[in-house]
Length: 78
Picture 1 (tube, rainbow, N blue to C red):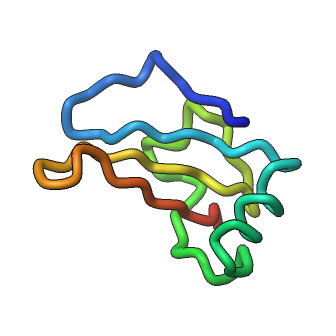
Picture 2: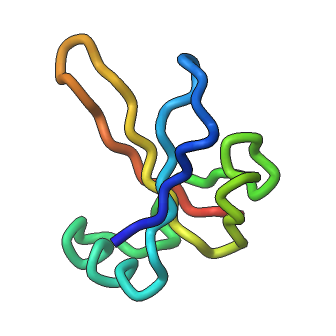
C-alpha cells in the first residue's frame, strides 16, 4: 500500500510513509474526508526529501506515543 524509506533513521524523526496514488481515494473514503481537508506538509520538508514526494501526494506519519503506543497522522504534500 505504501512506500517507506529505511535509510532515514533518527530518533527525533517519526516514520514517514508515502501512500501510493491508487490507494489515496480508498484512504479518503475510509476517513470520510477529502484530500484537501488534510493538514499540509511542505515538499521540501527534510523528512520527505528521500521519499521523493511530489505536490499532491499523501504521507502517513507514524509517531511513537507513551499512552497510545503509536499514533498515525496523514498529511497532504504542498
